[in-house]
Image (cartoon, rainbow, N blue to C red; front, side, top):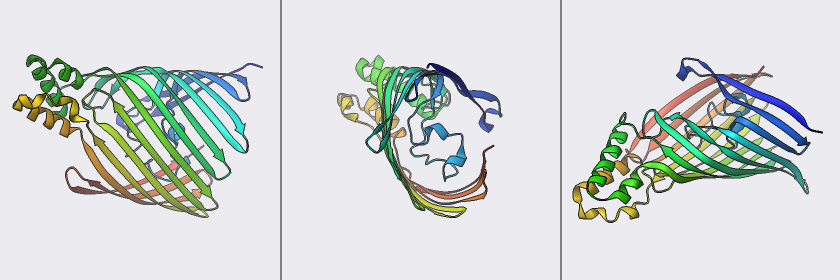
Length: 315
């Protein structure tokens, strides 16, 4: 029969002065054991660990690899249809979502008003014994307000105004992010075989005809479990770049061309991250984690070392 349930998660983050907020809150109707419809504010199933972003106990790192898990939003308001079934010996889960997102997030600006409308997508995962794989694809109409609160934001806004005043309205529209088509693509697989752990995820994100660079990221992570201790090695790669061919008309105006190159270069990124870490489950419901990461920025030719320590509890 039809079953109804409500679920919510309240999160308080230090970055927000520990003000409590609903991370998600939704109603679920279970039409059967393998089909359910949810409505409300939910976690967007972009990544392997999307459902557990705020439950660090479920993964081995202090934080999931940030080269991939770096989108400044993770929830949406809308609908989710979830179907689970058996495909031979495989467990199959298909989730179809539709909805929107409207909030202030840090993209180009420190606090830009961002809207994702007509967001639609599908997330499909398959698992068999010690192996699981997933694929996801989402589209949306994307609008991001660029404020003059960062150097990049000021450069882009100034360039957009200069383009319009010089008659390059099409190129100016390409700078603005106003109801532009965007897509997000993800693939990944995981292995948990005896004491060997392996995770890999690849993602792409692009807002077409905009000043934002196309983002391409992936990571691979190998771990080994020894009773209460897990050690792991992780490699991350991030490569954000532009298709500048649509600005080919600008070389006739050297000052605009120079400004465009400067603005677009500011949103490029190319980096590698190497992490070695350990997790100690000192209690059935608590884990101590230590990660050492080396961040190599290929744009600025700099290296940064970071040590992260955390204790995760479940109760």
